[in-house]
Length: 259
Image 1 (cartoon, rainbow, N blue to C red):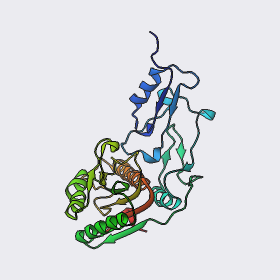
Image 2: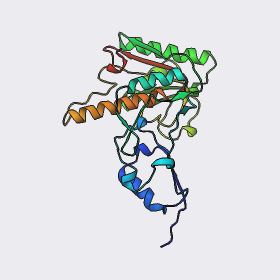
Image 3: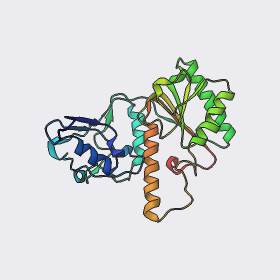
Image 4: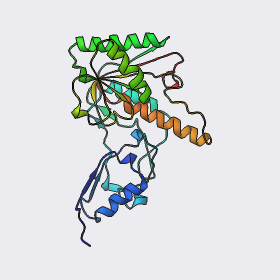
């Protein structure tokens, strides 16, 4: 039976399951320029962990490259995000390990992210509204601004609503970003993966919410796996910011922000 495809390009392969990677391998015969795969295990947020070589995809030696230059975010934002991952063991998608710190750098320096923790929920809400208004007054379009939080409930029932109550235009990002009109983007951390905005505000970063506290864990390994995934999710959210990053929360401080 003739093969239908000569080449395949796949992005975000760190979130592919083993069966999905095996399917890619089966769809095109092994040959020069057969597969072009891009992935970063530091951004794995769905729990899938698969080895490319075990799926029949050979990336050893000159078949693979590590990309170390960040074109999106500033060095200051990148440093802040990478600090969340410090101490974690991250795989290289092929049974080895990778170092998030070694040689990875950005083209621009930029200002330090602003981390503001509040005593009460109302204080955080007032701060977010004021920050969004100041960005707009500085000349940012509403669509240049994204408010992101850990859960759909926080996005839809709280943060989108406080912006509406303040008379600010809001667009909840659930589907294709290109189909949305003008308005401040509000989305979960999972949803903004793959997107970028000049200004990002990560809201609700407090104990119990980020990292999200589960009722129980099967064992200590499961608890640590969940915590590591939450760290990667925080890293993804922070690195959606091109120019400015603000992080807020209230009440008990998140373990991610201590120290």
